Amino acid sequence: MRPLARVCVGLICLSGLAGCGADGAGDVDTSPAPTLGAQTRVGSSQIEAGRQAYNTYCVGCHGENGDGKGEAAVFLHPKPRDFQRANFKFSSTRAGSLPTHDDLRRTITEGLKGTAMPGWEFLRPATVDALIQYIKTFSPRWTRKPGAPIPFVIDPYGDLPDKSTAIHRGEVVYHGYANCWTCHPSYVSEARINEHLEAMENSRRTEFRPGLFESAGMPNSEGETVFPTDFKRDFVRAGTDVEDLYRSIAAGITGTAMPSWIDSMEFLSAKPSGGPLVRQADVWAMAYYVQNLIRQRPAKFTGGSPKIRNRVQRIFLHGEPPSDSTRSPEGGTATLEEEFEDD
Image 1 (cartoon, rainbow, N blue to C red):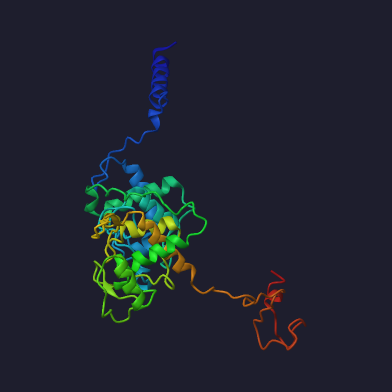
Image 2: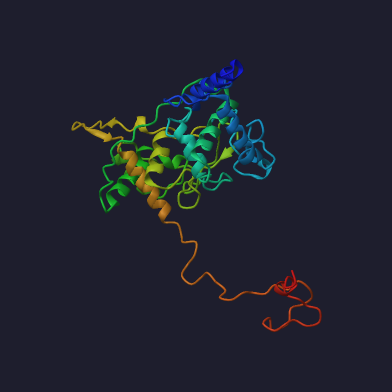
């Protein structure tokens, strides 16, 4: 073999060994890590994939700079999330903490009800992961780690076919201990609230806020007036499954007056007999109560109300339609069907 040929064969063999290791090392992203945010261990190729996906699916609402000021934002309410602030409302971490990767994945894939944020469930998992890493480059808050997820304690009502016990307990805790009616609507009378207050060893009230049976508007962390959810009317953004409701109640809603309740649900009775007045499992009771309120909404359609045509309805493009729409039109009038017969 000639010397030049030997050199070429050797280079080919070395390149094959370098790219085809038995441990798959050739598939590892060896690009330099970016310096933005907390993404010091993420290859720049993943960030670039996330940027491309962001510019395809997200930039119109959230903006090129991630500030929530995309071209469509002016038409939207509520406004798109400002990724520079990095205040993510719905997460499994306590209110005020950064969300986990799974929290962001859930929001992207499932969307937020009652907003312009759709569920992007058709995106590949790798694309969603890349999107999340790119979103984190917009804010220096991501130099910190996400908060710890709230505990999902055992659901004492989960195996019960009849949830009436959970619903009643949730009503008591909602109105008598957590006093949710100071922001959300009350769903019982003033007299009933006082009964629940006494059951929770609180003082009776002689006065209640105006508009007790409606939500009370208050500013969020960005200075906008927001109205807590009326569970018999409004969209519940992060889902209506009992697990979703538990997570929102236990963790709270970042940037709003909704606190994290999971750490406030261990309270002993002041009575001589002692014992816990509330437990963390009462978050499940509140979740079942809220879910029951949601189910009390009036049906969108009543029996027989939808009108469905059982035949094609012709559309007339020119002139007045004839009295008998099944007859071929005369006098220059044409149907949409006939307009395109020659195409």
